[in-house]
Image (cartoon, rainbow, N blue to C red):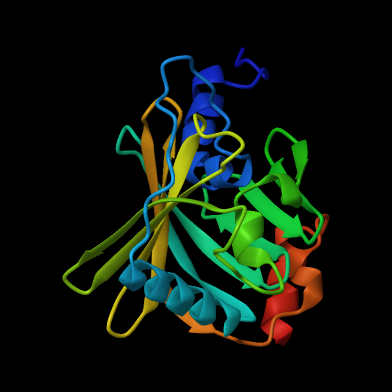
Length: 228
């Protein structure tokens, strides 16, 4: 007789597949006594100009939708759909067979495993994602910036939480000239890296507020989006 108990290895795989989103959403909190503390960079005038440019870029985005590709530290990958509505709201829906949904309703980030029927919540304000979802994005006081890096048509900005400098870092990745948000990389306190790449982005589409509520079934959400 087949077991009806959840497969632990499958559950572990789901956790790893969701790590990039969760690491950013749940404060990079994988503490270890051996983690090196992040330190703020000495910003040049060019750095400040780039930070101002990136803040202005985000402040022009009220809504966004597109695709994401997540690659974990062991090379495992998962894809899905992303929707964002500032201030405070986003929705990450993983493609099958990964039964995960992560939604921010403006106050809480909610992670649901639809197969296990489990739900976890954490305040949005306690996470690094709050910075990018505020009414106005500002890389001023209270934001730790450890690096601003430039390459051939690429710009990377690495952030950390000043009150918890050993808990890891979040690197925002942009194409440059023209500036375009390409995704982010999370490095946790153990030095493991997970990346999210964005594609097929549509900026400032009309998105229903209901899309960022929790509780509708996938079929209901598909019908809602079909009507748009």
